[in-house]
Length: 230
Image (spheres, one colour):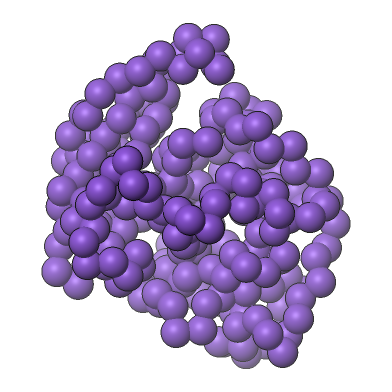
């Protein structure tokens, strides 16, 4: 599955995943208080207020925190979003995750060799608004392949654009590879929302291809060499 920036519907969790509190660094441990659902975070990972948030119309500040996708809880959240997007026709994936073996299924979509990292977008406290994925590929030297999910309740408020600008500014901080100087993403030609985001962040169209797996749908690729100083 190619990484795509696609706002799409969130599928409800069908079962709870066990959370090893002695191993996972959770949002609850950061802010205190008893949360029913915890998203495990990476201790010492990327953690900053969302930059360029002036255009985000959500009524609260947004914080970016690196999600620990090596835990079943986080893998389940990510996979639930991916499967919902597939069912909605926003992306295509061969994965058929049904709330079992989340770590194995996530590794099929994001192999370890691609060095995947996930950054969640949160309201201060607990609410996950969406997430960004970062991965690499030998076929795209110098580029971080970006995917993004904005959950439906938080769409159309400028969060997608702000998330991509955040990714540009803190690229090295997140990917932890100084050889990465830009980003790559692709989307459906018909996805007006993502095409608009690409224009706003000044991404450059890098090509178009026909996706035979989706009945000949046209996919548009974008790159950006922008890597602002953190």
